[in-house]
Image (tube, rainbow, N blue to C red; front, side, top):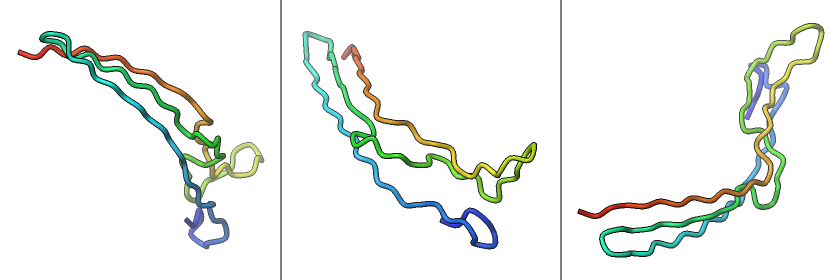
Amino acid sequence: MPMRDDNSNYSDAYSLLDMYISKTIAIGMFDIGMSAGVNNLLDTDYASMILVNAGSFGGNTPRYFYPGLPINAFGRMSIRYNF
């Protein structure tokens, strides 16, 4: 994707691999859900946001890229009441 109107800078393409697993258990009138996962499983360096035609401040070079998150894990638990 071009980052400037004059097409002088381009961003690199990237792919992310995420993994997610979940389980729901019914206990009486309740459903208990548990899940866990990993985002960016291969720890890819990527720009999650690109600022097109970025300006510079204080004599610094323009900052076009905002880095994406590195590998990270998460877990969830939910309880649902069924009427």
